[in-house]
Length: 205
Image 1 (cartoon, rainbow, N blue to C red):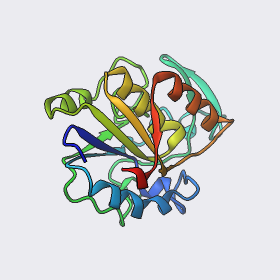
Image 2 (cartoon, helix red, strand yellow):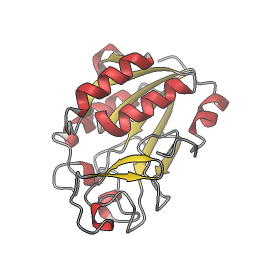
Image 3 (tube, rainbow, N blue to C red):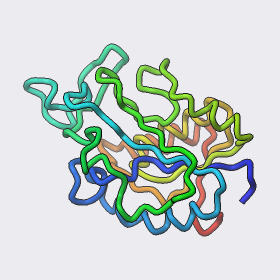
């Protein structure tokens, strides 16, 4: 793999795998493939959803609302989620079989109690940057491959922002799984294609 490419592994955490608080079907099945793919990259960054208790994206923080309802936040529409990935809990931990010891950074997102954060590059208010774009630039990265959970939310938002910051961007389809809530997977692929994000498979790397 060329040394100007990086792998971004999105939110492969217990709460997003079967048995977790917000499980993505088959979320754990991609872990062995991600491990194999990661061995081909010198630069690997792993993200973790990492919320304080009582986060504004939790349905429990909005009396009368249920998980998967939508509310309007100061920064726009917000899907309300079950309580998940609360910082320092077992649910927020990376999947125990994820084995990428050479990962150069673990980036935690969603720490701001009033703003959700799907993307690894920018919070949902679309102004607060995580600094990941600068990190990749400083390492000479020009192309980013993405995998993980969930394809139609955190993977897709991260891929769109990677393109926004000028990186060639490709999603490794078979190393992702989706929630597909209200046709969200199809809509995500449409946005990704419009942004210039390409699709590939693990066997082609």
